[in-house]
Image (cartoon, rainbow, N blue to C red; front, side, top):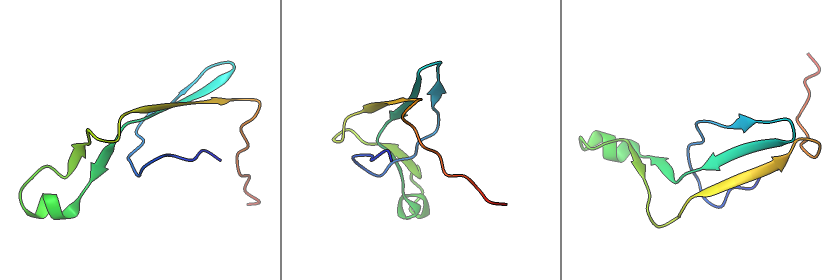
Length: 66
């Protein structure tokens, strides 16, 4: 499991031969901001940015039994 240090919108990721790379930027959404006529999405400045490198051999994905 990949634990993220704060709630954010993860938009993209990259997959290489050996790694899954997940950039975690503090992009948050707020319906209240949107209702007030402000941008619904905002890039936070206090949280910082995180980039997770997950080894492909170590990643476990759920499987469906459908």
